[in-house]
Length: 400
Image 1 (tube, rainbow, N blue to C red):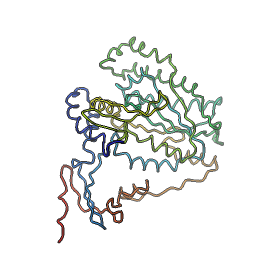
Image 2 (cartoon, helix red, strand yellow):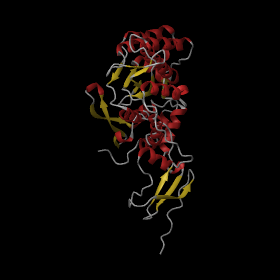
Image 3 (cartoon, rainbow, N blue to C red):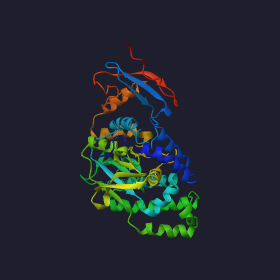
Image 4 (cartoon, helix red, strand yellow):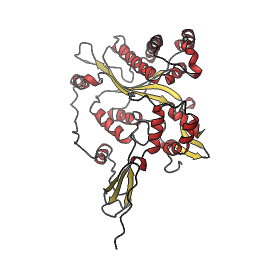
């Protein structure tokens, strides 16, 4: 059983100051911002408000959220809103889950060149899927898909890979019919893997030739062209990991999957098991050994280091849409798909202007943030707001 209330923020608040001091030269501004945001999230540092039950008088303080995308506590509402937006885009076809992973030689370069290499990962994955799907020997159609970047493994080590959610078919080149893939089979993974490897290595070499890659510390020698080529040599010969999971059962399962994957952070609070004597124990799944459930204990500084491995560059988009689902023509292309599939138009729920976040959360998730946790009968009503860095005035005096 995990301790009630144990959070990543607790570890950052206790160990973060010494970590900053010990790693002052290695921490980026982005990593510092993430640490600060997580430490301050839902504390008096960000301000908040006081609520009171209109039935029993119970009071509670609600501190404001940091809203940082790396914070384990700040993803629920944005995830729910994103899923509602995707619900109207689902087609009545089989959906597939394809994962593209780079080998360790590439991952090492990616960590020191996140924006450049992660962009290459997105571009070459998209080109691979669209090229093979468009080949008449395979599907012979234009497809669309969502690509989601994850940079971690269950043990929090750096492991960049893309999860792609793809409808099982596409539009024929003449635009006049829907081409379905074979039931239970999307595209041959070995063919995908070979093209993905070739495209990625080519793009990475171009980035090197144009001086877009930087190398530090243990990789500093890779600034030399010969050393760079030698480092890449094993990756050019290895089989790159591309695998397709079994297809989803239907649109509902697609949304459930997306809800688990799209707005994840490196580790959620519910995986934490213990934080004692400067050590953090957390649950993880060992996929190399039949997905066994295990626990791992790390020194708190090492835990923080691994967490910070996954801080993305500022403004970097980790969820992207391609092909038929590309942002620019998405609505037009999806309408074309529905016409070809003789599928009904989606029911669109109009968003309410200036809707309170608590009402929006309940509408999207079915969970009420207003119900009184004490009596269960009343509604929590805001009675006071306080600014960042201040505290509420306190409960009103008891009436006699």
